[in-house]
Length: 229
Ligand SMILES: C[S@@+](CC[C@H](N)C(=O)[O-])C[C@H]1O[C@@H](n2cnc3c(N)ncnc32)[C@H](O)[C@@H]1O
View 1 (cartoon, helix red, strand yellow):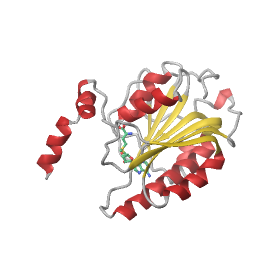
View 2: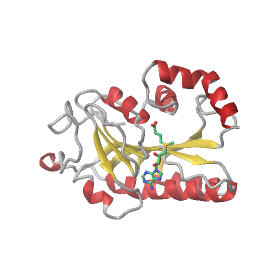
View 3: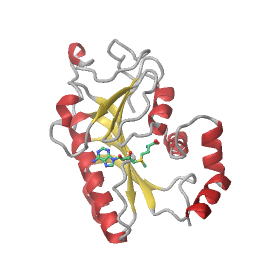
């Protein structure tokens, strides 16, 4: 079984390309594809990546936002630091996490969080829906008004209820599945654009916030505004 899985993985063109291009994870292609289609990552943006380990999405985001941008990666599992990135080890859902991010507002919040798979489909689906809710609760506090929220969810009977909860919060909400996501996978992505609540105000002085695990090459000054979606 494990052998067949590893053989399938070796034959998977996205896995092979990820290896070849040093992308850390096959998942990186899903973000690349979503961004090529919807253009939500822009130079100078500040991006929060939830469930970031081993860093595939964060690497793509760092490349997209460039030296004027900033990427903050959050996960319960540490990963090898990314040059120019900032890592906060923590659990989304922990009320203390918001303060640890600093007094900053983000242009984009990403969540590729997955629950620990139990094997019972409805349980895993319900947990995945709960992770999106947790990610959105945090996003509502840290996203700029008009910001973008992208979150993975496993398909199931709670999906429509979740869509109805999120839709009124954004100017536009799409539910999409990138080609890089395996046919056999039940994952989908919510992409909410134009957060209706959120704040315009992000005092320049407080932007940098207390940094944790910032690696060499990270931008040390506040981001220029204007790169938002
Ligand atoms: C599919 S992986 C993410 C892959 C990543 N996007 C990449 O491209 O490398 C899902 C991650 O979600 C994390 N995760 C799950 N629940 C979490 C939570 N409540 N808070 C923080 N991270 C969580 C897991 O630790 C795991 O690393």
